[in-house]
Amino acid sequence: MRKQLLLAFFVGLIAALPIGTGHTSGAADISGTWKFSVDLEDGGHGDPTFDFKQEDGKLTGTYDGPLGQYKVTGTVEGAKAVFGFDFTIDGEASKATYTGNIESSTKMTGTVEFRNAPHGKCTTTKKE
Image 1 (cartoon, rainbow, N blue to C red):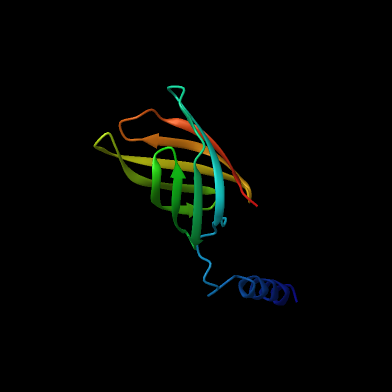
Image 2: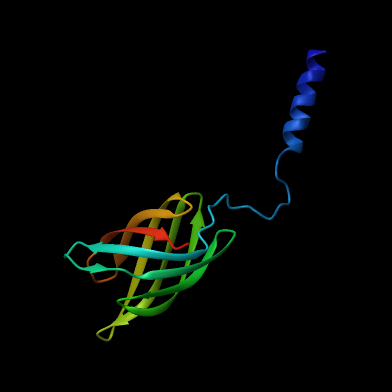
């Protein structure tokens, strides 16, 4: 009897696994418009807006802020988003890379790193 109960338990457990659902990343979905507040180490500040579209763990979208308008690419894995864009400033190629910790469906905190420029911290909220 005990073996039958254990077998039934494991069969039920396996049957409950999400097989073939197309959702493989386990990532939070951050699709939508997000307003960022960025504070740089050198005292600089910016309030860019990102529009994200997420499909599984892939992230695409746009950045609109003090640096101009750029296409964004990145990834979302679990509660972590990493995204960025390439840009040119004063004739020099650079790159912005954001790392966000997804705290809820409407809030992220994290960091931004620029090639050849000061790094910073950011907070963001999703526009409703």
